[in-house]
Amino acid sequence: MPDAATQPARLSDELEQWLNDEVSEKTLGGLVEAFGEKSFAILFVLLLGVPALPVPTGGATHVFEVIAVLVALQVIAGRRAVWLPERWRGLSLGGDRQQRFLASLMRFIRRLERFARPRFGFVFGHRMSDVVFGLLVIGGTVAAFLAPPFTGLDTLPALGVVLVSLGVLFEDALVACAGALLLAVGALLEVVLGTAAVHGVQSLL
Picture (tube, rainbow, N blue to C red):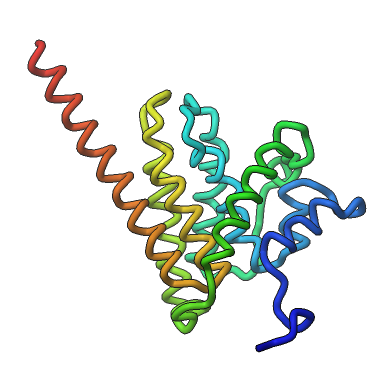
């Protein structure tokens, strides 16, 4: 059994260390600089974590979803460093509301870390797997973006993106697959309920 000192740091510990570091800038740009290539998946967790909350957002998270799509396109293109416009790089993660959200997100990550472990890690880190990752993020993000305001239908596809991204960070294919399944169910639910709503309106006309 490997000594605790030699085990790789857990994601939650790395994030907590960065959040508590008084020197590091608590912005999206600061996160990108601190985590390098990992910041792709971490950004997806942060950006889609808000619409993944089980509360209606009323479209307030659309800017996060636009940023997520831009970053996912960079994953598909094979970039090794995240590029963000200066305006978006300066988005703060240090406010009281952001801190409460991050605290909730950290609790979720810590719970998932109890069960996650490297499984089928050979599927990660390849050009094709990066493309699939980027496409899944775009699919789930677009589904969350298109969900009617105040319906809560953005929750499942957004949570699916969060789980896929955490699966990539943990190198746990089972977590990633669970996220992809949840993403697909959420998108399908939107289509089914949307179609039913359209037919209901048409029947009244």
